[in-house]
Length: 196
Image 1 (cartoon, rainbow, N blue to C red):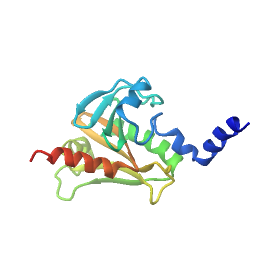
Image 2: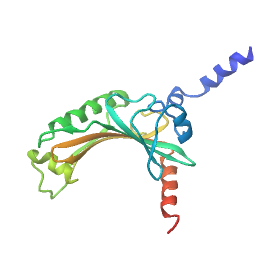
Image 3: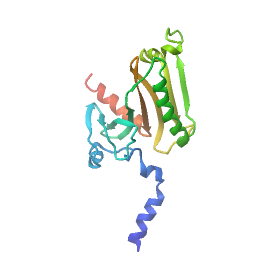
Image 4: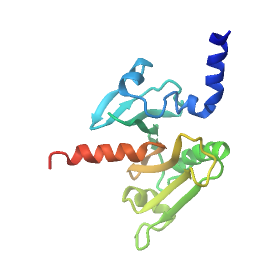
């Protein structure tokens, strides 16, 4: 009898959100355990790994970058949507951003949106929206954080962002930072400065 009751008690003692993880992965997972789930990871340099498929990936995201350090394990996932051809106003890219923003707002509460062009930029007219983004003088970002929003306990932040690869092509990224991200950054910084 105890053999059947014990697993149930263990399952009930952990919040479901911790057991579910993000995209079918768990906070702190190792490269080895992620690969055992059938994920094909390629090292992208340092502690970053890339893949085009996760166990519970999103059909709107084409590929994922994972930050996995030797001690802290998985601490960050960045998903990228398909590159989008857009006009100089960025209408198509904004539309894709709004699609994700609406879904995330519904799930986690309304995030903090940043939609602005930097002071002094010559690309401040709407017809130069993509040029401003390409020159890194314009931002369209929404952020959900643990302090203010309804995030699961394993997440510190979710950042939805836009990037321009040219003045008529852009991409939306979705960044999940877990509760162990600071430890991962410490490990990464130590590795980067180890041989100085």
